[in-house]
Length: 179
Image 1 (cartoon, rainbow, N blue to C red):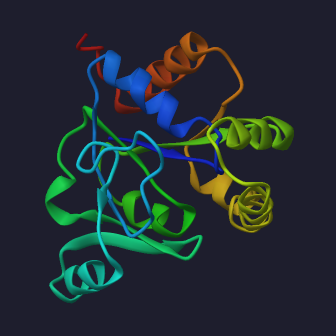
Image 2 (cartoon, rainbow, N blue to C red):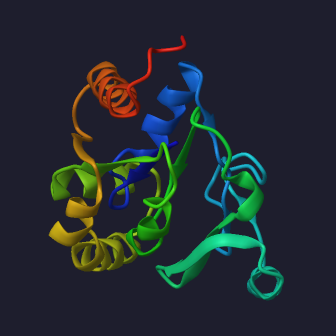
């Protein structure tokens, strides 16, 4: 399983879509965050109310869950399956995944000015951008980077990023590429 970790707008979703093109499937997680324009329930996330999310916590539905930017995010127990999948997680949840065999974590780095520009392009307000940058400075730090197996330049070309992830992932698993 590939784990992608990085600040807001570092390219995690885009990298995930590139991984899908080469045969990986996305593990769809749950959130109480409001959907962004063009996001689809069950494809991008499973969007829940806070009450629905809290009920699922009570039912031990989640492998892990965190609060990030005042919203809940979680991964269901039954979605942690095979090595040909990828998942986007927040730093608070990362540690639990590192205990899973065949799990390789990649930290996506990107210059702050690029992050801000990407957030503007996706329609985030100036206030939202400022809050995310301040929050991300706190939680996406050197400790988080050290927990990940590898660091990737989220500002590189998609071809370079995917080749680097594939090479390091399959090298780490000592497997031949299956596609």
